[in-house]
Image 1 (cartoon, rainbow, N blue to C red):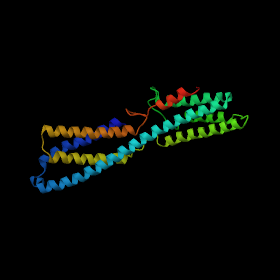
Image 2 (cartoon, one colour; image 1 turned 135 degrees about the horizontal axis):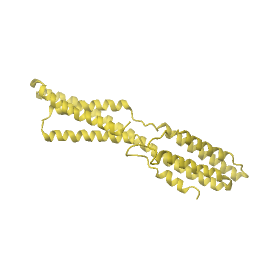
Image 3 (cartoon, helix red, strand yellow; image 1 turned 30 degrees about the vertical axis):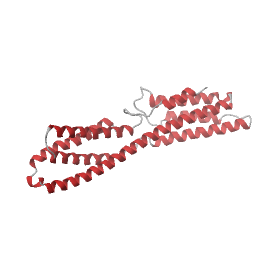
Length: 253
C-alpha cells in the first residue's frame, strides 16, 4: 500500500465529511437541532470517536511491533554473521571459501534491500539469497575436520548457519506487512461519519473550519505513519542497514 495515497484518502474522507456536514446543516430541520437532539448525537459521535481511537491505537501498536520485529531480525542476522565468521576463522585456513561465500551472501542481502538502485525487492525469500545461503551451507558441510576441535567448530558453524537461515525465513513471513486492510476501511468510514457530525452541528466560521482542517491533516498523518511503518523497506521510515553493514565490515578480521 502507498502510504501517501492512504493518507490522502483519509484526509479526503475526513475533511470531505466536514464540508458535507456544513451543507447538511443548512437543510436539517430546526426541530432536529434542539438541545435534546444534539445531546443524543454527541453520545453517538462520542462512541464512534472512542472506537476510532481504539482502532487507531491498535493499528499504531501493530505497525510499530512489525517494524521493530523486522529491525530486531536484521540485528540477529548481523550477529549470526559475525559469530559464523569468527567460528570459521577459528577452524583454520580451510574455511577460506566458506568465508568468501559468507561475505558474498551478506553483500547480496545489502544490495538487494538497501541499495539506492533497488526501489523494489522481491522479498526475503528471493531466489538469489536462497542460492547464496545454500552455497554457504554446502561449503561448510564440505569441510573435512582433522580432529575433535575442528569437528566442534564445524558443527557450531553449521548450527549458526541454520540459525541464520531460520531468522531469514522468519522475517520473510512478516515481509508483506501486517496491516489489515479491513481495519483501514472501517476506520475511514468512522472518521467520515465523525467529521460529518462536526461540520453539521458546530458553528460555521473560519476558525472552526481551520481547526477541522488541522484535525483532518493530523489524522491523515497518523495513518501515513502507520502504513509507512508497516512497509519497512519502502517509504520514509525504513529498517536501517547499519547492522548488516557493520557485520560486513567485521568479516575477514
